[in-house]
Image (tube, rainbow, N blue to C red; front, side, top):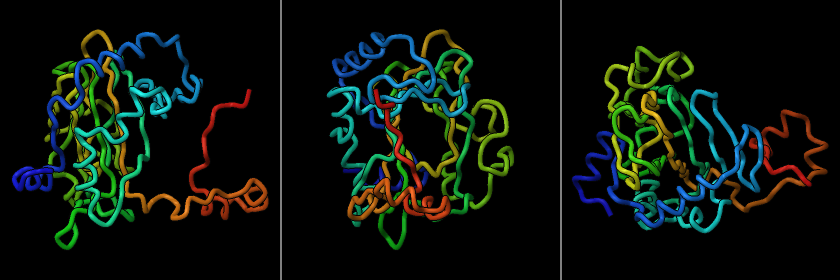
Length: 264
């Protein structure tokens, strides 16, 4: 569990680093898995893993990576971070994984800076309310290779989850309009050794710097939300019901359409 000082700094800055979260043998096994992959294309399925990108420049995402075998399954509740996740999600709820993937990014790749405390939505963006933790979206990132200057490190603006003002360089939809994250004044590059973990309040203004070095940036990303965002009783709408509903009703009953591999 975090010390009082660690809690204070997480509340103040919005992030913490867990050194040596994953052991070398586990890291080696995951890198061996990636090295053994055949050439993959965006929108292709590799078993139950979906090959995805947010926008091309951000690289290739192996979405649903927990379907890749036991070496990835053990990340779901890894002892290096799961107690911290439960602690910062808050005492009144349990975490579930909203997204779990590996991002692979080559030279020139980056993801624009986005989010921030100013974004109006239904989430508590500060992570605290009435003396309790209630982080509504936590992001956990673990590099499989060292991330130093030029390797495309994650960038954050410390404390921006509490700001009611957008960064002057952000566009109106809360993303950076152009260019990599290091261009943003006030951004901090987070350098990590392979196996370290970065846990942060996803309401921070964050993104990544451009990868300038040869090779690949390999980063595991898990996003944990309070389980109240899932269906209370785990009901799944029937195909018959979905077929009868108007698009407006369907969007309320099933706001996220299940994405599954094509039937062979």
